[in-house]
Image (cartoon, rainbow, N blue to C red; front, side):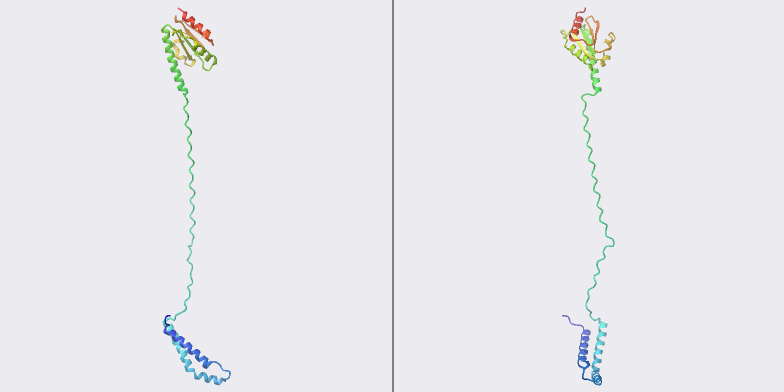
Length: 232
């Protein structure tokens, strides 16, 4: 335990001395008179004065040196809270989902043949048939050219009948042509008028032309071709 400062020791001694004098001399007595009390106090007056002087001296010394005082806990000031609480972090808006990629429309399947391609093909076939007919006429063969409408049932039936007629060892040339391609046979139509469908144009070996208008069965067609073969 550390030693006490001298001023504090002096203060304690003075206090003890004063308490002792009070207990011995200054404590009231029931048997003493007022005169005796005064005599008793006067007897110890020098000691009292000394005690007071000691207390005074101690106080002065404490004032100079700073008497130790009881340590008190400092009031703890709570930490100053932030003046303004930080606003809570604004939650980021959820990322907008991208619209689903629009599925491409399935590629349009190419049609087997466009109308234009079909027309070109039919025109090419008709032009080739026209050349065949022209060559056959020059060669002195019998030529049977059927102009028909493919949308009509009778026309399609007559086309089938013509296809079944024999060629007589190549002496008969048979051609079926859609009426839409009539222009390809301009050399023929200059001599023979073709005004309807179905219409069969026959050219015999003598290069004479005749027509069979409307539907005709295979028997009639065969007879007309036989007549053309016999022509001189």
